[in-house]
Length: 361
Image 1 (tube, rainbow, N blue to C red):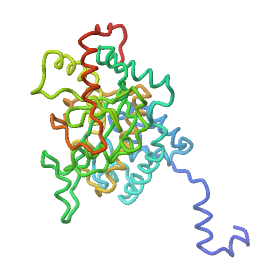
Image 2: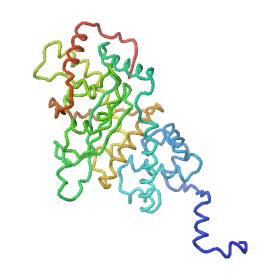
Image 3: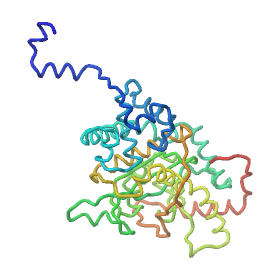
Image 4: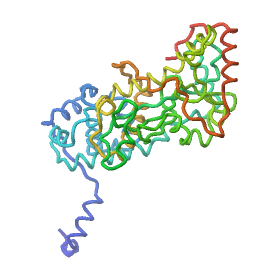
């Protein structure tokens, strides 16, 4: 050590160490790391393929050092297993506080790239692909102006203590927060909005979302498919819902059938994300309820990354429908889309179905 360094204070030495590149030796006595770094399939441990993980590392610009990779592996293992921090710490042989720090840090880093992964169609050509895809799903040209499918999903949480804990209990009586999502014809999320307490109606969540308040998507002449839990609207956000069950003729039933074929892609998207991260979506998250929206957003981002990498999962559970025939609360500024729906219904009864010459799934 030079004479100059010998005169440094402890604080200056620690500052120098903190700014130097840090490297770590992989502890291959940890089975989960041994399997990963010896090129075994990571999906049993982390629920994502090696291709998906490579995309994630590149997006986070953290493919240059093993330490960053291990942080992401700890985060993914926690998502995949839903285990307590103490359990994850024993699996990786690191302190519990380190697991907590890794999970929170990587969650925020993933959420920070949200707009690179979850975004609305950017060009008219992109929108045309989505619209044609929905027409293919519906098996009818009347749905060629569909630009997305929307629904809500309840995420189980540990209810916060205090007088407002009842606000988080949904109609099925378990505490939750709501994920509202819009997907394209392939099940990729193009918009997400998460955080409202489970007792709030889907239509109220919708009216507070940027998608509704900014009214920038879909463009004029296009609409988003929704279930009966939402109002049928022409503006400010064009939503086309099915006809109510008690008010259906043969033509309306046929319209509902085609509508359901196209709209069900959002239920499939929720089914895929629940299957991939079962521990996160099917049991109460053991974290503070204010952190849950960040975790759920990170899961939605990972879902899109996996689909882009061809990393699909077989849905293990039947999709859960949270909606019903109640069209919820309508705002004073709303303009009904019932006439538009009637026009589409007439097109369904007049036009032939789309030839099955392309698989849009």
